[in-house]
Image: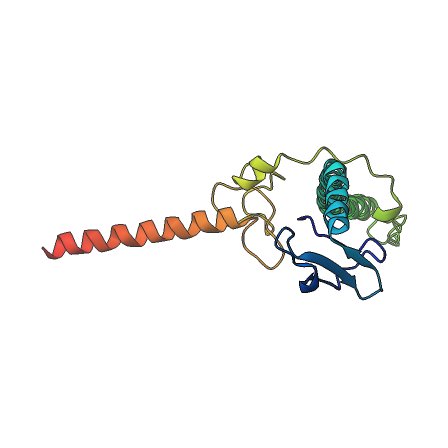
Length: 225
């Protein structure tokens, strides 16, 4: 911020500086008159002295103001980085819990299938020994604990950003998984309402389709020639 001369009484800038034509003499220049709206007046050398005083004070405080401004910018930058890291951690925790829920559902399905298999084996054995015997009822499975109440292990550290940006292993979903990215060489989980995990994979797929179409056009032109 540039230096501005202010009124020494009210620290405002609503003032006028005019020449007093009555003070002109052949050996003396016009004298200046400082008049502020608050009523403060300065004359001649008083204006110059006040100007120099304010300028020296401004220059002495310039370094402190610059350090304070740098500190403010650093605080704002650190806050932005902290919020971005928090959003990333929350998203990663959400994906990790969704993966744990999918695993818990799969384990529950396996548990029910195993219970059904055992019951069928018991029924078959009973029929072989006594065809007229009353079939036993299915034993109900104990209810599984909700995933939110199960103490989950700590999630592994998030994969590096560069690895995810380039379509690296990331979450590592198997081929054919409905949540897998549509780009052939990427195993990341796709984003919501999208076929791809990132803009990078979408661009790669678009370039591959364009290259394939261009190759077909060149082949057709050469065949026609």
